[in-house]
Structure formats: C-alpha cells, structure tokens
Image (cartoon, rainbow, N blue to C red; front, side, top):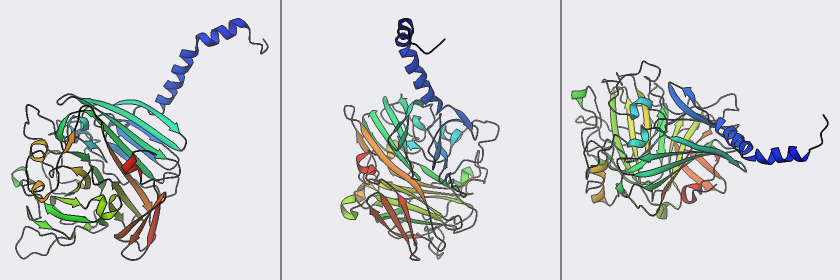
Amino acid sequence: MGSILTFSHLKMLFMNLPLIAATAAASAADETALRTIHAQPSFVVATKEVEIAVTKFGGNMAPVTFFRDSANPVRPYHISPWQEEKPSKMPAPILNTLRGDFFCMPFGGNSDEVAGEKHPPHGEIVGDPWKVVGTKKAGDVTTLTMGIDTKVRKGHVTKELSLVDGQNVVYSRNTIEGFAGRAPLGHHATLAMPEKEGAVRIATSAIRFGMTCPSLFSDPKSREYQALLPGAKWDDLTKVPVAWKDAPDADLTSLPGRYGYADLVQLANEPWEKTNSPAWTTATFTDAGYVWFSLKDPAVLKTTVFWMENHGRHGHPWNGRNNCLGLEDVTAFFADGLAASTKENVLTKEGVDTALELTADKPTSVNYIQGVAKVPEGFDVVKSVEFKPGEVVFTSASGKTATAAVRHEFVKTGKL
C-alpha cells in the first residue's frame, strides 16, 4: 500500500542483510552448478567466446568450446571413448574421467613408493573431488576458483581458471601450499586427433634436445605397442629414430602417424633467457582451420612430453580405439613418477631438472595459457611465434599468419 518505507521496514531490511548477501553468493555459485557432461559431474563457466567444463573428480578441463559465438566453434580436447559406457573398474583413477587438460602432482605413473608415500598415477588431484570456491567477474576477467586437499603428502592446491572477454584463451593458475619437498608436476593437455594421417602439424619453441622414453612405455605383454627407438636422443622433431633397423625416421611434426602404436617422447625447452619469450607448443589442425597453442614459463615447466596414442593399446579400457595427442608441459622424468623424477636420471645428467622443490612456508604457483586461433587457408606448420603487446602472431612455414589476443605476460606474473 504505497512505497513509503517505515521504520519497521528499514529494521527488517537491515536484519536480513546477511540473508541477502548469502542469496547473492548462492547466485554466483549457481553459475557453476554441477552438470553431468560426458558422464561426469562438471562445473561450467563461460564468456561469449569460450565455455569450459571442469570435472568435479580430478579437475579435468573438457569439453572446452572456443569461438562459441561463431558459426564454426572449436572443441580441440580429447574425451576418452569409454565415458558414456557402463562404469567399470579402472586401472587408475584418472581413467574414470580422462579428458582435456588436467594439472598433475606428482606427475607420472608413481608405481614406486617413496619415503612412505604411495601416490596414484598423476597424483590424488587428478582423481579425487575438487570443491568450488566460487566464481567472480572483475573487469573483463571471469574466474572459476576450485580447491583440493592432498592427503598422501599433506597440502592444498587452488586452481584458478580465467577467461577474458573478447579472447579465445584459458588462463590457468594452480597454487600449491604445503606439499613440501621435491615433486614432478605439470599440465597434461590432451587433444582429440583426427584419423587422417598427418592432419595435425606440430611445432615448438627452441629445444635443447629431445629423447624417446628410455624404458618400455608400451608393453606387448599388456597388448600395447610402440614404434620409436627407446632412449634415442635427437634435436629435430622431423628426424626421430624408429625401432626397426633401416626404417626411415619418424616425423613428429606430422601427426597422427604410425597407426597401432603408442609412444612417448620428451623435449627439453631452451630457457627464457635464451629465447626472450615464453616457451610454446602449437598444433595446427589444417583441415579444421585452427591452431591450438600453449604458453608457459620454461623456468617452471622445463620440458614437454608428447604422448602419441594412435590405437596402440588394446587392454581395458583402451581396446584399441583411443586416438589422442598429449602435449604435456611438465617438470618430470617422462611419465615414470615421483621416484624416477627425484633421483638422478638421464635427463638430470644432461642438466635438465625433473622435479621442483616445494616449500611449506612459500606457495608455488604454476601459470599456464592455452588457446585457439583461426587460421587462413594454406596455413600449415608454425614456423615462428611473435609476442606483441596484448597479442601473439603465428607465422606458418607457408608464410601465412594468424593472430590471437593473449595477455602472455600472465605466464610470468600470474596476473590479468
């Protein structure tokens, strides 16, 4: 009856301010309410350009839709083919959700116990449930924040995934508190691959050298098969020795290749001081018309592991059907885990650290960028990357260029 606020109205309003604030917080949480996506409960956050889904269990990021406001959206990440099947017991927790990009710690198989610690493959954080702290919008930046406590080695990881209006980029920041001691860690970005051989062209920033996995990565006793020569050292992605005598070298810039095999190699990145820029990896999907890229600080993530899975595993749950490419920016010894990464190995003998020293009293943050740029017809393998204020320019071997709006300084500062 009228719009006059009486004293009793005002009193009621002030008494209910906590309820109003709680309702506002709940509304923010609603934006990341759980949805079941490819059989997994997932949190979703989006801008006009990008939508990301992150699994509650393991914090796996996929699907990610770039250019979602265009006629040709891009979904570059792999989702394992058994996701929609009846749940079954998996050899490792990560296989329950396996998709897209996920932060690993300790990175690798972790088959051996170390100082009383027995970690699951790639660590608890890739299989256990994460909790959403909240979402926020600050200026043109939207951030989803999640957290998880570790138990085998006590600590806490805070994951921040940020999107910037007008950009087709995901900015990741994983901050580790506690978890003191040396540990391998890193990102396990996994791309979906077409079946057409050579349809994806791979390039990286300057490397010191590359090496194929020195141990048996794919064991025939488990119906797994590999094609590359174990323990070979090389400096050219186009000339990687294969296991058969007198067979031509493998060209790892042209994938997928070697149908029926699963192989692992590792590249030692040149330091920032030598290149004067972030380290980068690109994958040009020539038929689909886009380039996927990752950017990192090579002082934190010192190497890149290529996991080339081209229908080479026939045990459960692979069953010969998995085709994906892991472009994994890590500080680790291949995929062997904590024990191998924290002792002397063939990489540390070459001056390449394979574990980071984490301290209880000082948080460690790992900043990482992934994104997509549309490319013109004729754009093939990336030849060079130029970092300009607020953007990155990719130039292909064919001379074509593509530009992405990126705040690339984030890999150093962690700030947007």
